[in-house]
Image (cartoon, rainbow, N blue to C red; front, side, top):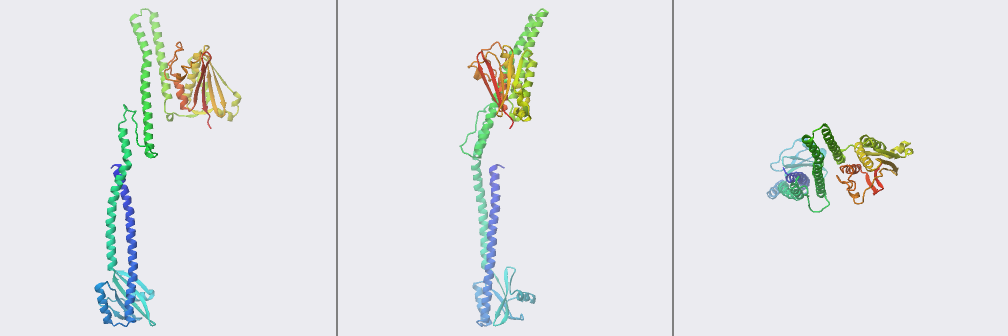
Length: 457
């Protein structure tokens, strides 16, 4: 069952329950009012008949004649009159006899009513000239019951007409409310992996539907970006891996066809090994780049000390390049107390931060003539700052805006081997940790890469 039909049905059922309670309340209180009104009318009629008997001294024959004439026009009450000894003084034609227990009950209560079938019976005490008399009368409320029957039929008719009207109205109302959702469904159907640029558009309004549309569009934006990055990443990998693999294949084929001596074969194998190592380095860098592009919600974070991460990064670089030298400078006095040590605590992923710092250190050493770099740790007003400084040739103003782009390599340093991936990895890792990455560089003066983190508060 569709939402419009289900909504209409649920709304109709709730409305039916409310209308039923409302109609039943009207009928119930109308019936109570009819009973109270008929009790008053019956009491008046019985008292009026008694006054004819005792006060007006109307004879029984005349009283019965008047009673029979009134019965032809209206529903007249039948009465029986008893004296103090419960002896019948007056009885209408066809009137039933009453037992003594009932009369005793009337004497004790002075006034009482009860129902017998559709008729209302009334017993009451009637004093006259110092003597005690008792009256029992009964009548059928023909007019009241007719009105109640008419009211019942009217309420039932209105009830079912109202239910039908509510169902039809609620159905069209649900259709109107769901119209934007149908529009969204039709718009989303056009979105596919080949058409991720499609977006959902609808009238501008600050409501839940607008929030839903914004959520969909935001999801499509992320999906499009992810797909584009994936396509771009795959194409780049194919292009970058083609070079070392092609060189390796060409070298081995030449060795197979042209080499004749053992030295020639050794030289070809050494060249192929260099190409294989190049492919391994490239694959490791691309793997780190992929990890740096993870959704931060999928990466585990913990409390870390930046000085320990930086030292681990230093050892990582020096294990890889034995001729690289790294100096780390920080204020030892700052770390004397537990409170001071908390200044260098940040929330992050240890492996990714080690990769980021290792890339900065490796770049600094690679571009320094003496293969040496300096890493400073500075703490000030809740901000932990790490600076990696080199004494290399520096970065030109033309290259500076592009150094964090993937596979970008400056034309001013063609002699330095690399793939242009390291700084892109650093940028994404720092962004994932909500840090700031800045660079200052002048040609001939070297470069300073600055990373800032907010400490754990």
